[in-house]
Image (cartoon, rainbow, N blue to C red; front, side, top):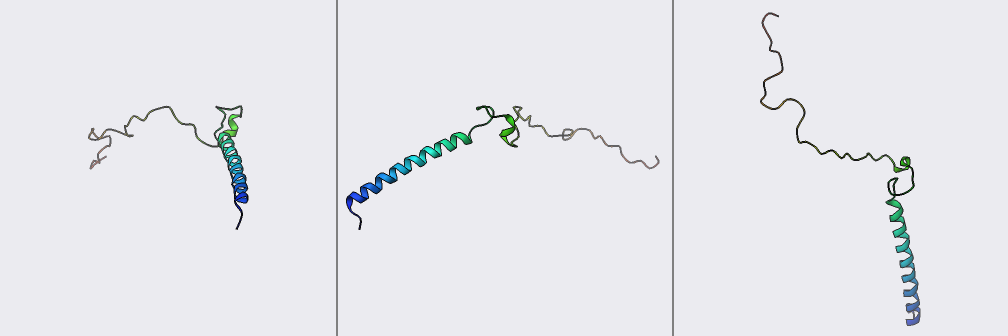
Length: 79
């Protein structure tokens, strides 16, 4: 069984390693969030993500409104 002094030394080492890993994690998250708009990187390095549109959907569907007069010709006996 390790002594109390050895356990304290181990806890100190582990705390230092945790602090180092947290700093590395923060740096990697910072780098991951960079793109051409918030850094000096060129737009070609942004990847294949499509830009988001600023237009709002109107809610209308395509085609003529429901219940409107037809747009098709009826079949006749003699053309």
